[in-house]
Amino acid sequence: MKLTDREYLTLASITLPVDDDGKMGMTVRELLGHSAAEAEAGTQADRRLHDLVLTDRWIAQDATGYAFNNEHDDRWFIFSYTPEASLKELKALLSGESSLLGRAAEFLRAGRGSGACFVTGFGLGGALALYAAAYCGDAGGVVFDAPGIAHLLDAQQANSPGIRNIAADHSVISPLGSHGETVEFAKPLGEPDGEAARLGQAGPHMYETDAAGRIILGEPDDTFGLLSKLNVLLEDGPVVDDVSGAFIRAAGLQDTGAKDLIHALLPLSERTGAKGIRDALLDIAAKYDDHVERIWLEWKQDMTERAEKLGPGALSVAFEIRSEAAMREASAVLEEMYRVTEAFLVVLILFGPDHSRVANRLDELLETVAGGMTARLELLSRQMPNELEALMDISMSKMFVWPDLQFTFKEEGP
Image (cartoon, rainbow, N blue to C red; front, side, top):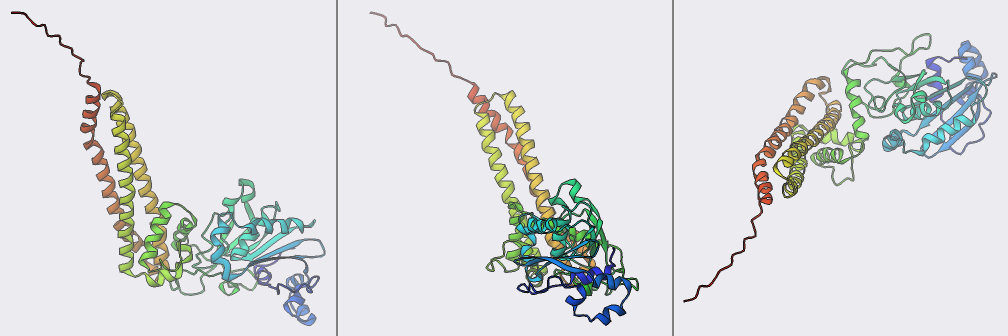
């Protein structure tokens, strides 16, 4: 039995009190508070939905799951996530560290039934649904504005073309992660480019359906592609820390306990103006200078030690290999800082008042930081050859050994 998009919106919206187990065995109609007459007056599809029976539920902190079935033992699994906890748990969920992923999958496996299997849910609830469905094999269904979790699964599990993920307009959530399901885009409800990027969890109000119950779809724009760059915000490492710290300091958030941008998106966009962005970019360029200075000092110490042990020929070969490695390391750090900075600028621009001109402003700002870092990289490429002569002098001096000359003086008599 297939449900319409509108009916999936209804299912995904069902929530029950945590301590209320008395609703087991109730139908969707009863859970929604509809009378028998109201249900009978609906369409045949509505009646099929209203006749689904709640057979099981799963309760965890900040997340819940419900299982419904029909007379054919087809199962519908609904996963929901507390909106207030979504941002807090986003990084843990998409990195695979959250225990809720495995527990959601276990809930579905335990209640799989013998018929068809379908899943639904909003936002992070949809992500739990996608993850759990991977262990169902041939699940169908519709999730709404869910981040992708395909990177947490093997290639076979990640491929879920039978599940549709309908992204809400201007959502920051659905572009995150990697997607193995079929991604579609809801038609914008407002004016094009008339709304800033939205961080909160989507709800039924973000979707419009036609007379047949299908969600009216639109086309993806540049915003979705730009927002996909925000996956870097879920990463860890010294470069991410450096760039994140620069923007957090520019926004005056260093005393709030914010350690990464994913926890400071809204206050950062509100507090960081044009001057703050410039200050952050200068800070980032200075951090890159620190990285290159470290690479330079390590190279110099290493080559000095080699010069004291190697002859000129071997030293020349070692010089070429070690210098190339140092340049590769410095170039990799530059590329990483550029990529992370780009993601952070996307956040600031899309959450700011001028998000309709993202591409132009993004290129301009990135050029600002890239210019300074590239100049420092070019300086490194000149510094190393300038040291070669001194290194060769060290090598030559170590090769030359003064002879041990002994002189015997013969005294002559008178």
